[in-house]
Image (cartoon, rainbow, N blue to C red; front, side, top):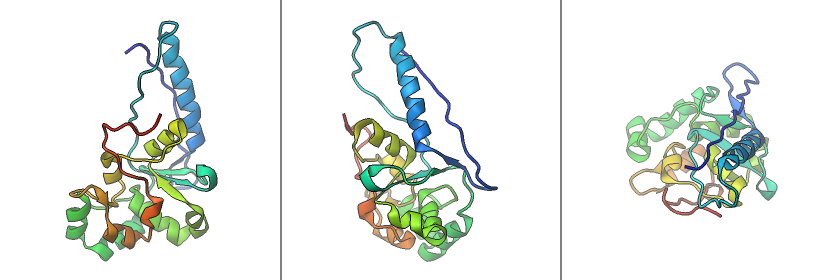
Length: 192
């Protein structure tokens, strides 16, 4: 390690039970942290690679030109509790765990997407792609849209055994799989 940098990103609470972040603020923090980290490196040093880690449970909606169309609804958000119960009823608690490896909860992308369909359909309708927070940052860094099995499993839309988007779970949420990112192994290069 030749340099380290960091920056904070605020969480916004537009009303009780809601927790959101602005993907543009993530980008500003990333730029600040990278500048800080590269400032430690000797002159002429080259960046060989960037590894990303981030909050798994969150929903970033991209519209035209792959730009965010709304604040990201993050893991701490509790507005989708009814939708989490609806998904469990539609799929069945045991089958949900069998497919996704976990029960659904608020803040998971599956519940958030169903909430958006029921409560903010105009925003959900405009979404051309749906990413996790880390996927949103990857897209901004590289222009590439992708996710890894770890983040994908946190959406509760992944069949964890086959590492593919689950037709049954995406149907229960009403999301077209074409709006979800391609899955790449965590060790694969996901953009340059």
